[in-house]
Image (spheres, rainbow, N blue to C red):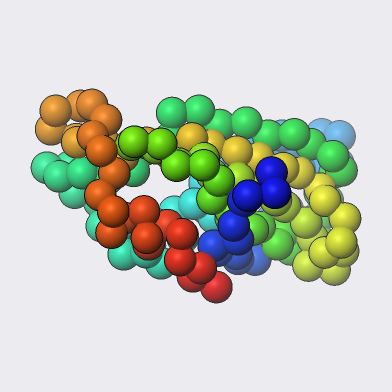
Length: 138
């Protein structure tokens, strides 16, 4: 993963309701944190949802859990981009705590595909979109 590039980051508060019966953040919530980060990154790039046009969708998502998040606290989520394909880019996410930023709590990924929504299929990603994705929005 040496070729990944940091392009966005944000802080996400850990809510009491994110916890499960075991007293730590439920594993499904990590995917919500990644979604919140990804949507904020899309917003920062100016991607407006247009069901009659083109835009990004994810076709898979994964997360490796290294440490437990617990309430109270704040997640520091960092968005990276990796390899680009004809219509896709690899999205990589690291999650730490703001009060423990050197310890990796989780690492996630999602493949983002550029889609023609009316045709319901992938389409080549325009070069200006690639440039926006490569440009840090910190």
